[in-house]
Length: 92
Image (cartoon, rainbow, N blue to C red; front, side, top):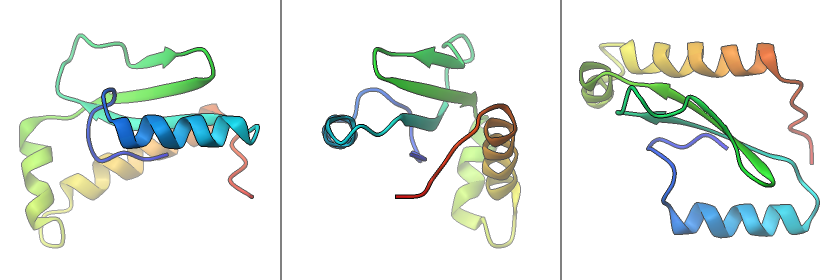
């Protein structure tokens, strides 16, 4: 899952995780964090959370993402880094 906000908490995402886990899926969540001291990788009981610190400038540039590509670059680099470290099968 790719979340355009910090996690946790998000009750809708937590319910989706529960549903997917009942179907024997492995869950990985990519999200950002404003807090530089928050753990970048966290392994919960049944899922993994990948976090990357996002600067206020990069986050605010999302409103002009088509003209200022900082936000897209943030996500592209972050997801590329995760995909290089993990073997992820996104098929259903």
